[in-house]
Structure formats: structure tokens, C-alpha cells
Amino acid sequence: QEASPRTDTVRLARADRRLAQGDTAGAIQVMNEALEEEPAAMARLRRIRTALGGEFEFEGWRKNGPEMIEAFEASERSYDEPQVLVWDYMVVRVFEDGSSLQLIHQIYKLQSEEAVDAQGEYAPPEDGYMLGLRTIKADGTRLEPDLIPGKETISMPNLAVGDYVEAEYVR
Image (tube, one colour):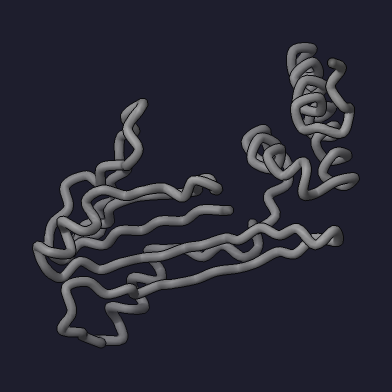
């Protein structure tokens, strides 16, 4: 059975041939054309295109997590809850064919051992890809988790009461 030229697999193979020839710009162009023709069917190519240095649909809408934490702390608000969602941000891009992508960025402050346990294992969205995931310690130190192949969740490093967990992803 011959593969349809309109499938992302065929377009990815074409882009891969360009990459093998040292033509990164050509590979990105193959993906751009595929995404322009059929945005929904070619959605998987967006992440690959971005990784190669191509366009990222949400670049102008991303926010700086540490700045959001700084603003929260400057507000001097306090909550008597195990954890506080201090930043909950979503941007939706809707394309001409009706397909869409969402950028989601959340930051939790951990105020109890219960919250540390609840946030200790992060389950990434099945239908998305992570842009960032980290522990931000009370002193501002940023710690990235180590990915363990085959493990469905991601262990957040060295969580303690007073820390923040920041997650940003696209789906």
C-alpha cells in the first residue's frame, strides 16, 4: 500500500531527506507547506519544526514564570490551603481549518507536605508536549527533573514546603 502524500509520515520523510542533505531550511519549508495545506492532519510536525528552529506559534504569548512568582510574592497575598495555583494561563490558537492548539502554563506554590506529595510526580499530558517543567526553590534556585525512560510520570526534584512547581506545555 502506497502512503498518501498528505500524511504527516510522508511529509516527515521528505523533511528528513532534506535534513540528511544538510538542508535544514528546506526541511522546515517542507513542514511549513504541509502545515499550511492541512493544519490538523499535520499537527505533529509543529513540534519537530520548532525543534529545528522553525516558527513557534506561541512565541509572542509565552510568559516568564519567575516573573509571575515575583509578582505573586510582591502582592503579599496569603492563602490557608495546602497548595496555591498562583499562575494559570492558557492561550488558544485556532487555525483556518478549525483545528487548534493550546498553550498552558501553570505555577503552584506548595504550602504543605500534602502538596509536596501531590506535586511530587507530574503526569505530562498525553496529547501534548512539554515546553518546560521545573521546581523553583524558595531561594529562587531552579531544578529540572530527570526523565526516566519508560516511566509514565516525571519526578519533581527536591520538593519542599515553600517551593513552586512550574509546568508549561502545548496540546
